[in-house]
Image (cartoon, rainbow, N blue to C red; front, side, top):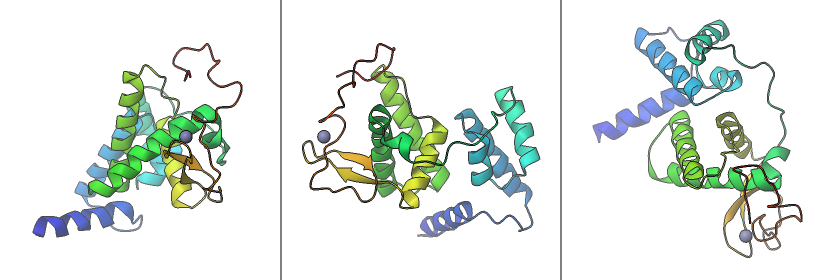
Length: 196
Ligand SMILES: [Zn+2]
């Protein structure tokens, strides 16, 4: 019971970072730990700024120290298109299914959930010798799009699998990219691409 309450308290604190509150040493060390973990996952600055309370300058220094290089400049395009193209959609759907599955079972904060889901996705891809097309930053962006209601999951009417779609997709007529691949699909000669 006490553990459950403590857990909820940590969860609330982690999901609503208060930038103005006096920072305790403990909280700061947690933020650094979190930023370091995200950098190791390959997260870009956008993710670090959104998911930690550390200053931009601080994050840049940490990034250089951990990644051994400056973070890449520029933002990811703010568009849902990437997640809806054939091969990318299959990767995105795989990741989101893992994410949704985990979110129902274990009590983790948003960043822990994302990291855990991403590690599992990456592991599955590597075991199948498929290049993990979805980067950690893309996975983060995908979850944000889903939270904002800009993307959702729809069940394929043929195989019943859940795939990333636009929210207004007609579920009665939806067929996924595996059941109904585009003509060019699976013709890629590049290593690690999906083949049918
Ligand atoms: Zn299908």
